[in-house]
Image 1 (tube, rainbow, N blue to C red):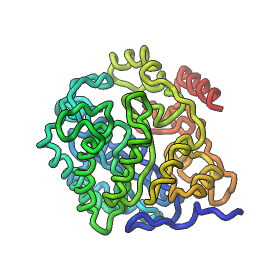
Image 2 (cartoon, rainbow, N blue to C red; image 1 turned 30 degrees about the vertical axis):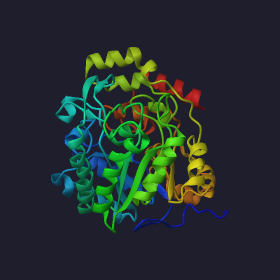
Image 3 (spheres, rainbow, N blue to C red; image 1 turned 120 degrees about the vertical axis):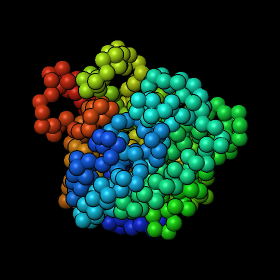
Image 4 (cartoon, helix red, strand yellow; image 1 turned 180 degrees about the vertical axis):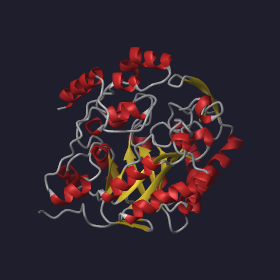
Length: 409
């Protein structure tokens, strides 16, 4: 086999991983009651046993107001023992354990987060749908401290790393983007002002992380729609995060509210998505206008690479590539371009042992066929690959999946 960096160790801050693969923080939807479940533990243990360098538990809210799903983790002291069981299981398999920390901002509803959703600015979120209250300047230091407290809880729970979510249109991203930040105070207007909340959060995070927790930050290279952030500004954000002391950046893009398929690529199977919804009016509403609300964006392998290479030229700190990696060949190419590590999600959902198979097969390729069924059901029930379901899918869903997969082939 040719020389490959893939199975060499990599160091991110105080943490050394056994290889350069990371299970990205794709939302599992496996936490009913906002706490860890046996299903969550079993899934991450399977990925760890499958050879991953680090597996990342997704999208844990730093406060109750930061929840956007009722099957999402909410960081609080009472869930620490359950999370400790998960990290122990992951460590036993030889992998490191990370957890993504964030706040959804305006992407919620009172029925889930327990209050009127808050964001960088007041307004109306069509996707919930709900009115949103802009956070007052005097509330921001406490919100930043919530991120720091969550880092301490993560350490207590046995995690080796945290990934701060500063992308995809969630709270930090809502402050950064001119599309969602319409503030007239010192947190709005210029990019310097829009970065102030992120700076505040990172100060608390780095203080809490000390010298024994690795800190990764997921950020947007582009917001993915007109009026959002573009490379000229996001490169400055990356440089600011480098100054803040973060140990690695995860380079992503897209807004879940405005350009969801820019994040994930391909087509959203609307029929599959609505099949699992409980709320009748939402089910029929999404079925009617879903194609308009969630326009498809063509999938290609390593779809963020072109933009990520521009960051590699300008940023010295470790960079983690994420987005459309499904083959050993493309992963080797990305690592040869100077990225320290790679993240994957859908390939590992399809095959938790994919990393071990790549060790054996130079031409290993994931069996994921990019129908995005896993994402469609994630909004209502646990994420799962349609190729490995115990239950039989209704014919209408099978038909939809086949049609999409044919288009992606």
